[in-house]
Structure formats: structure tokens, C-alpha cells
Amino acid sequence: MRKCRNRHLVCACILAAVLCLIGGCLLFAKFKCSRDASSNQITTELFAMDTYITMTAYGRDAETALSDAEDKLIELEQLWSVTDPDSDIYAVNHSDGQPVSVNEETAELLSFALQMAEEANGALEPTIYPVLTAWGFTTEENRVPSDAEITELLKNVGYERIRQEDMTVQLESGMMLDLGAVGKGYAGDLAAQVLKDNGITSALLDLGGNIQAVGTKPDGSPWRLGLRDPFSGGTLGVLEISNQAVVTSGAYERYFIGEDGKHYGHIIDPTTGHPAESGLASATVIADEGRLCDALSTSLYVMGMEHAIEYWQQHQNFEMILITENGEIYLTDGVADSFVLDSYHSNMTVHVIQDEEI
Ligand code: ADP
Ligand code: MG
Image (tube, rainbow, N blue to C red; front, side, top):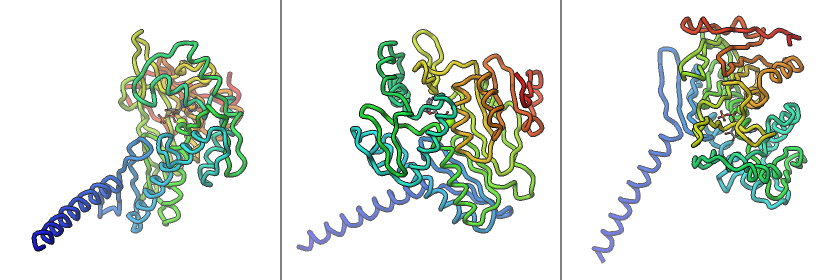
């Protein structure tokens, strides 16, 4: 009997130790936090939405605010993951054509994505997932699908066939929804809102390269961001922003080289079902809202320079910096003064896009 009790005690101790270890790891995964007491600055890092996220906030309430923002991001990831069987998107994708009720934020994200897909004339295509999978971008087992396979898969692509009524979504059987091209931007908006609701007036969020600024730096000066050089991976220049978001799309991070030696990127041109080859190396969008930046950076990258400029001239509710494959920079008038090329890139040709040019 005594032996048995001891065994229970040992088991309980081991269990407690394992739980502490797991708890510790989870806590670490969720909230890796560093503090600079002199400037009241706190930085947290986490991995969510398939990307590394770093958030820095200033002020007395920064720690609580950041913890709340992290909870929000984790909640959104659980709603929008394509692979998590408990997510809204998974439920829609496995509904076999039946209507599905989704969370309010999922509904908002979807209706925004559908509106942007319409405005971008289908360059943004929230139902491109089956084609993306055929190229192996969802499994990392990359391959070049045959033309016949792509033609067949494209039959199940078409955002205009999604039916949404408030919080109810219906997808035709065989279609798949993936909000990866806009979700991180919208998540940035919502995380920034959580910080503001907690009284934060100065913060910088980096969601895997999607930047979201709350206010200015604590001293009132603008945030200074390095714009990535799509060719070398280094920095091309410095961009100054305040209370805005900046998102870049390009094919330099997620791509594979085929047996034919060609470079295939993860952004698909929905008209061909092939990785976009629009002549752009990257498209950066600067605007008040992260979701607009995210949707547009993907869309403009697919459209290519001429259509992107036309789009900007028609809308003008954002600024953009386009870098062409041949190394020229096209930027809109409103950002010309806030972007400065690094000195060793000063030989690059820069074109300033004015209203009604082209
Ligand atoms: P990232 O998420 O890599 O920062 P984007 O915001 O441009 O870059 O989104 C790319 C992701 O969007 C792809 O990984 C894929 O899931 C999806 N996608 C690819 N092509 C399109 C497209 N034409 N329209 C909408 N989503 C797309
Ligand atoms: Mg995007």
C-alpha cells in the first residue's frame, strides 16, 4: 500500500514537472519580452500566422497592451488558418457547398477581400489556393504542374462565386478560400487597435515584414524603416512614416527554382495559374490601413507597373514604391520626400509618378 502511495507521489511530481515545463515553453512561445526601462520601451516577439512577429510599444501600459495584442493575433490565427481544423476558413473549405457561420472579424476580412478582388479586377484572388497547392507552395514540395492540371484547377477559382451574407459564407464544393494575401495586414490593424485601446500612442509592429505604426516615435519624429532590396536582400533606402502601414509583396522570399532553372514565386497570376511575372521585383504600399496595404501589394505585384500606375491614378488613397525587374524605382509623388535611397544605391533610376502621368 505504502509503495503504491509513493508511486502515486512520484507520478504526481513528474506530471507537475512536465506541466511546468510545457507551461513555461508555451509562455515563452507566446510572450518573449524585453524591456528598456530608461525609455519605457517594451518589445515582444511571437510566431503566429506562419510568420515572426515583433511588436515594440512605449509607455507605462505597454506590457499589458502588448500582451492583449498578442492574444488578439493568436485568436485571429486560429480563425483564419487554412490548415487548423478548428478555424473558420477550414470550416468554409470543408463545408461541401453548405453555408457556414463565421466570426464577425472573419466576415469583415472576407468582405474586404472580395471588394478588393473586384476593384483589382481579379488580380487579388482569394480562391487561388488549389492552384497554389499544385505548385507545392502550401507543402513546400514544389513542382511545376502541367498546363492541363492548371486549366482543370482554375475551374474551381473565382471569387465572384463566393456567396456571403453578413456572417454566413457559402463556397461551391471544390473551391477553397485562402485569405493569406490580406489577413496579416488586417491582423496588424486589429493588433494596433488593441494597443490604442490600451492607451498606447507610440508603437511599431512588424508582422513578417508587414509594418504597422501607431503614432510616431515617442519623441514625435517619424519611424524610419529600411526598404528591402529585392535583389540583394539588403536595404535599398529609408522610408519615414507616422501612423501608417507599409506592406511589400515580391517573389524573393518564398520561391523555388524549377528543374528548368526558372525562378517560381508564391504569388500566382490568376489569369494564367502560374507565378506572376509582371516585370516587378517588388511592390510596396503605404497607407493608413494595413489591410489595404496588404491587399494592394499583392494585387499591384500581379498587375505589373502600368496597371498599378493606372490603379493608383484612379484611387489615390495610398502611396506605392514599385521596383522593376530591371532595377528601376517608380514611386508616387506623396512618398517622394519621405523615401531616401542609401548612398550605394544612389545610381538607381527613380521615376516619380504624378497624377495623370502615362
Ligand atoms: P506574404 O504573405 O508572403 O507577405 P502576400 O501578402 O503577397 O505575401 O500574400 C501572398 C500569399 O497570398 C500567398 O502565399 C498565397 O497564400 C496567397 N496568394 C498567392 N497569389 C495570390 C493572389 N493572386 N491573390 C490572392 N492571394 C494570393
Ligand atoms: Mg498581401
